[in-house]
Amino acid sequence: MSWLTGLAPSQLGVTKNTDVNLPTDAPSIVRKLQQQGWNTALVGKAHWSSHGKAGDLRDDLPRLQALGFDQAIEVGGPRALRRMNCALTDDWAKAGLLASQRADLETRYAMGRTAAAWTVRPTLLPQALYPDIWIAEQSLEQLNAMPTTKPWLLWVSFVGPHEPFDTPLPWHGRNQAKNLPVASPKPGWLNQLPEQCELRRTSKAWADQLSPAAIAACRADYADHLQLLDQQVSRLLDRLEQRSDATSTAIAVTADHGELLGDSEMLYKGTFLEGAVRVPWIYKEPSRLRSKAEQNGKQSTLKPLSLTNLLSKTIAGLNSGGKQMALQNWASKQQGAVVEFGAERLFIQGPRKLALDGNGQPLWGIHLNRDPQEQTNVIEAQPQRWQFSPWWQQLRQWAKHETKLRSKPNWVWRQLRSED
Image (cartoon, rainbow, N blue to C red; front, side, top):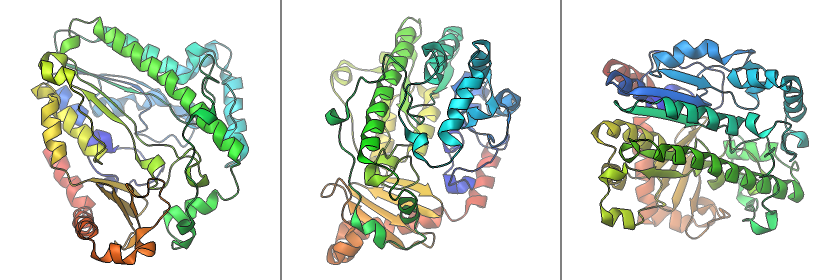
């Protein structure tokens, strides 16, 4: 919802997984392109509507059209596909696999947080009906149908990398845990946090749930799934290169959240630890705009940035050609990134991370350059550095300013709706 509207989660009032519907008159960066003559299409997981009850995602097509999509083929996440129908589940039914696939998902998830949910085993589905491969195939068809006489936006949203841990053959088993980075150990300071702190509560919920073998297996399967997705993205890029407008097309690759994969003895997300909040952002401007110097040079950074604002800025800049330099200039002026979950916020500025509670009080702080595995809470372990370092003081001032800006969601919502 943040990506589509350009609003922060707190401005939308949605800072956790919850059963909500995005209003059809919400701000939409896609609708603005559509109004300016762009052809727009969506394929994959959107989750801008309620998936809490049994239904058919195609019934929500009017919402997607109101938000600016000319065409949409929506797919639910694995948990939602236990009860939600869509074009993908129709194909499962035609192949005689719908009942068995849903039974498999029920086996994994019906009992809540148990080992069945993260046990690694290949999917029951044939390759062509595996969600991410099916999404890629539908996206290729949409790409073929895009006009060459007008600008277009194709929004492809894969389900993975995500649970269930069920990567199919031939990708299953390609990676071994011993060849992958190990999970970060659980730091002792987590248990010193206030009881109501989101990180403390999430950590407590995972206590004694995961064995080292289970963590290793999940990490290996996740790596397998990443390679599957790499190949699907390659299929799209190869097809794009065959189009006459390939040199006029900008490409962005990103993700909506990370995955702890055993870091601090937890899975999934729901925390401000690095595994959950760091996501990739890869952007390639239209090749016809690139100079030889830019083509030969690598331009990348690990500087923390707000992904919601970055995606909004990117799509807003497509009308002016999608030039990368405009994004770089904007990014260079940003103070850092803000992450929201529940009532808490995380502020990342350079290598420093500061988590605040709902009242704006510091919960914990990390210096990633000195402590990449997040084993030391600077606030408790290094009080002198925390109190007197000008860098930490600067971060605290910025966090205070940002907190004040984000405390008026209704005003921001009305303002952006009137502009839209």
